[in-house]
Image (cartoon, rainbow, N blue to C red; front, side):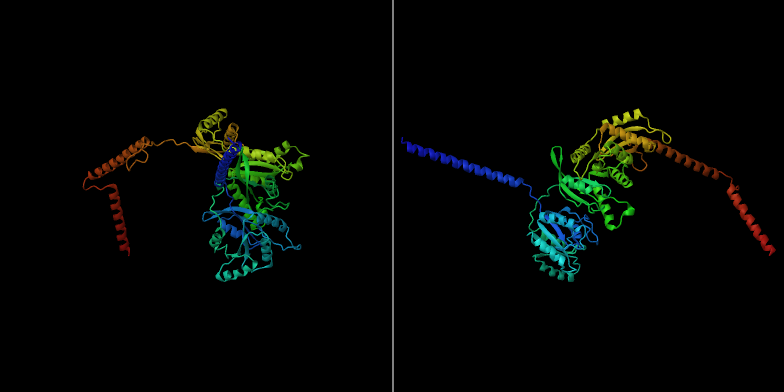
Length: 567
């Protein structure tokens, strides 16, 4: 055979093999891309609300999400940090962001508020991360120079912008909204956030290009952590240190934070990344030091944040004098909420040279006796000291939240506690324990059946809580014991609900029913005997009552006759 022909056949076979392999590889690559496209979690769009101060941005934010999240007040500059919330309309979901007002013109240096620069930095971050911008203006003021300045700034980003002339409360003001078309944007929707006029029209126009994406995560699955404390204790500094970003405004001025800001992040827990949210709250002031309505609303939002959270980071200052009276009020508020808690002792860098951790912790524990269940962690948010220790302690408290104790184990521990120390006598008899069960685990709730809850002294109840804590730990969680009197008589399920009028349903009520019937029969016999005795009386003889009546009548008639004779 000719070697040239043989070489040609070999090359043809190789080409056929390569072609088949190429086709197969292309098909595999297409299948992989298809699987990636199906499993890829698409990011929901972000919408930022921007504008100059006091035009109704926060009112529009609350109107869209249908909740009172942002604080609304007629005072300028109320919103400082970025407030973010998930919103949806017609099955389309998006992330809505409220921002502070842009209150300065370019190049202006005089009469600039101390917060304008920091608010501007927060708005800058929002503009860079937003897919769509809503420019809010005040239709009652018309187009002002600051509106034109903000519009010029938005043009440089090249994002889609919807101009929303707010406060269009009547048809005349709606017609005047066309003036804002000179800002250079095609889309314009006049609304009234207060009266919810055209809000639905705005949402229809906003989500027309959105895809119907599933929510990235169920709101109930987010593990929320509230950071609370008195003003200027370092709450915002701690959040920025944990996130590694200047997410919230930090300053030395007490009361910098006003809104309760929810910040989503991922928390490493059990070798997994758990969706979580940090809630930065306003500092709790004394009532006498609340200066205006904005601060009052801030404290209300902070209290709501504690109720929404599953875990509370309670910040206090590392001080040799222990905690303040306001710290103790906040501690009692956290304890009453029943939330898991970690006691975070901040600014340890200031006291590190002069005082040891043991001495500082002793004073803090002495001044806040209600927080003994909360583990303590010394940190420095400014220097980012011991943040890993704080996260480890947080994970430990989260593990305790999942702890569930069997009923047999609970009864064994409580019976041992009663055997070690008998309850003191309160009232007429001592406390008797029958059985108990754990009914909830966040926080740990135990239901104890006793003879009478009034017989349990407060110090003995605390002793039982300590017995449960020493047996099962429950680090960072308050233990709640509910006392309930055990019923003396248990109604049989065979006869329950089957009783009718005149027919008893239990053995105990049978005896009562018989006694009642006998009593009625005796009364009946007595009446009959009295009637029979009256019927046997001689016909001319009167009874005592009848005779007395007759004598009274005769006496009265004789008196009347004598009076007539005298006249």
